[in-house]
Image (cartoon, rainbow, N blue to C red; front, side):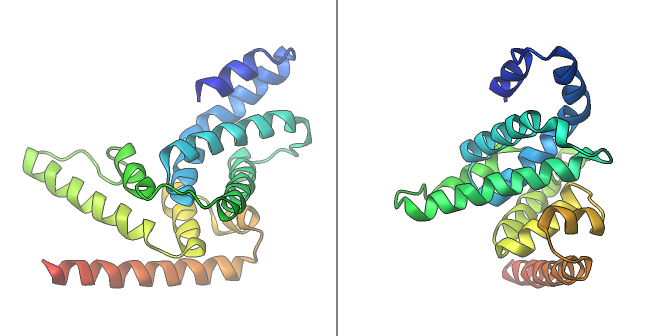
Length: 190
């Protein structure tokens, strides 16, 4: 991520860079989290987030105002789709990418517990939820991450995904049902 900040600082248009930093950098973690879920690889997610911010900065003057977060996530989605296309044409893929991605963010799904036991249980539950989300089909995983992790409205998700709000609602309902079923199956294993 440091490279994106260096590139922005050296861009020559100081006012544009300052406005962009103020508007866009607060959402860097959200962009990275979505990239990590979409690409399932920490290094690829970092690259995608950086590419997203570089493209967003290059085209910042075309931003029409309003919330910038959905605009950034739409750019990221396009970057990730390009990465999917690249992966299809390249046979060498890392098998441990998902495992590395799951280990990269501590505490994403957990809240601070009041005791070491509560922390351990919360971490286990968080890890299980992360794994179950990562196992969802792409369109459902994307919808649930945009809603529950990035806290976008249905309209914002529709704008990012380029689908009607009704489709967002059905994808979220389906994703939640799949997660619920997977969670129940997980609990029955114990």
